[in-house]
Image (cartoon, rainbow, N blue to C red; front, side):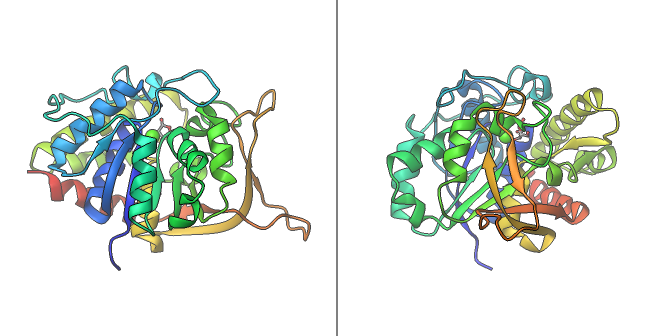
Length: 309
Ligand code: BDR
Ligand code: CA
């Protein structure tokens, strides 16, 4: 299988950092765009540039949305720390961004590269704005593979963080009309950084393995301190990449999914219509249901080892 061409739109974030590593190993990255999410835009951009150095990546990085389309900005310091990437000694970035108009970059790059995938692993602000400003890109992309939503929430009872931060953007993306793949919490919680898996990464030689071992340890400690019954942090974001590069590791179900914008307790919920009724609308989304977590972790660990010098 040839490598899929992608634009990775992210808010690193520990699991976004791991998504960058898997993408660097198994996709043709046309560019990385950043968005306000786990931390303010300056931090998510800084963290992206750090990862670019650690991997020796030669891809453009464009800074994107400072805030959601309608909602006030919200961050996830309770999982990722103040910097968005707490827990390791990270080198200062050696480069600066290639631009501060991520939306323009997405539009131009999609027009110049028919058949690319958009892979958002943060709030959907940049992607929604690109679709709104340049509706022609909907037909030029292969599809959108995102991390977000699920059959349960994490930021609220009903809503997952990425969708909850910018529900209006998510609404635009879920209604865009082309192929859409969703890695929601019900699948990403199957993919956990258990202590045994973290220890394997820590035992690998090289700088990247050291850094990622420390980052995964911080992330898992945060998860285990917040949850009753989890044996490791849920490594959400790499799954949005891996479903394109290793589709055999997943099961999926096509369904009609809408975003709740107005509910008193449910704003930001992804409502997945699983009713067995003829009246149910045609599916707009491939909802990932299961992942072979052991095999997927091997793919991710091999990618870390590959870049760990
Ligand atoms: C999502 O929210 C962020 O904290 C993670 O990076 C992931 O993209 C999980 O709800
Ligand atoms: Ca993320």
